[in-house]
Structure formats: structure tokens, C-alpha cells
Image 1 (tube, helix red, strand yellow):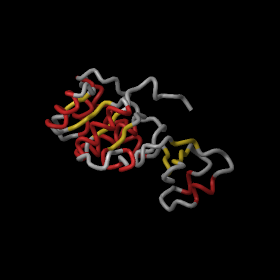
Image 2 (cartoon, rainbow, N blue to C red; image 1 turned 45 degrees about the vertical axis):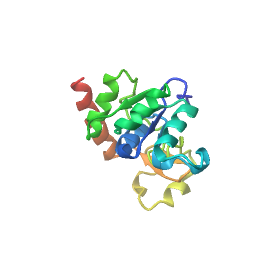
Image 3 (tube, rainbow, N blue to C red; image 1 turned 90 degrees about the horizontal axis):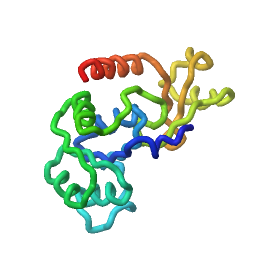
Image 4 (cartoon, rainbow, N blue to C red; image 1 turned 135 degrees about the vertical axis):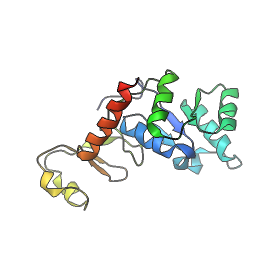
Length: 176
């Protein structure tokens, strides 16, 4: 697997940007959602905003937020931050591009959209992993590629949802 971490920005998002977090992960970007920050990563007496700022600072991540005060606190500490102003996720991706944040606009099977862990291709002989999941189309096993997250067990494949994502992203690219 390609080490994308050095090539592409890493993000932390506040709780108001859950959909954006998911989309950034689908696009292959290492994105930590505030709700997923473990308390072991934080000081006990920190508020959530301070915890997010601290996490962004210590992990050298770009902070994405809808919260004006959180953005201000991050900037005071010298943390790269983008205050997102729109509600719709495609518009939010446009905002990142307008801020010269280099984001990929093609869905790539690299990160789990649920937990942000890296996913891996299911190899021949590992089909049992797929058969254990009720949502995996059994008729496609052996006929297309699947990916699995070893952390949370989620399985991915390029189905109609991928076509729909690509269509939305192509519409976004057309207006850039």
C-alpha cells in the first residue's frame, strides 16, 4: 500500500462536520472526527474544543470546523485551520479547494469511512470474510475486488454507491 500520509494533508474535524469527515476518508484522506478522539489522547480537564485544538497541534493536522471560536483558538496556537461556512458536503469540499487545501477528488479504497483505519484488498482465499457479512452481495464474490477494514470489519466494493459518488464528484469538478 502507498504511504499517502506524507503526500496528503491529514485532518481533524469538529462534530459539526461528520459528513465531510466521511467524504474525506472516502477520498483517501486521513481524517479524525472529533467524536472519535479517545480520552486517552486528551488531558482530563480539557474542554472538547481545547481537546480538538490540542489534538490538531500534537498530531500536526489541519483543523476543519464550523465553529468560529474554535477556529480562532486554533489560529492563536498557529494551527492550520479552515472555518467551513456551508452546510452541504460538496460545497464544503469546494471551500477546502478555495483555501488551497490539496484534496483528492476521486474515491479510492484506502481508508475506512467509518473508523479511518486503512483498508486492505481481500485476497483470493479470504472469501469467508465476505460471506460473514449479510450486506455483501454474494453473487459478486470472486467477480470483483473487495476491501476490508481489519479494525472494524467493514467491507467495501465498487457498487452503485461508488458510481453515485463519482457522479457527484464529477459535477463538483465541472464547476471548479
